[in-house]
Image (cartoon, rainbow, N blue to C red):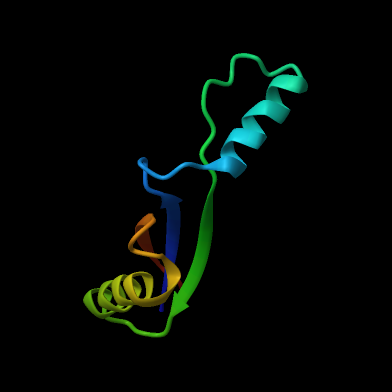
Length: 83
């Protein structure tokens, strides 16, 4: 079994109002050194296979077809074996 740790972020060309609001809130809390905030999603997905290549393919297809919006978001993932 493998666990995919998936990071999904807005593309740099897409405005991030949630990130901007979070940056503003951080400044109000005294974190004036925070220069930029971009928000995203983190997904953990367990894949029932012993073949790393198959797990890679499943994670890639799941991200491309469902997890991320390919027009607005980028994604990356790592795989780790699970006992």
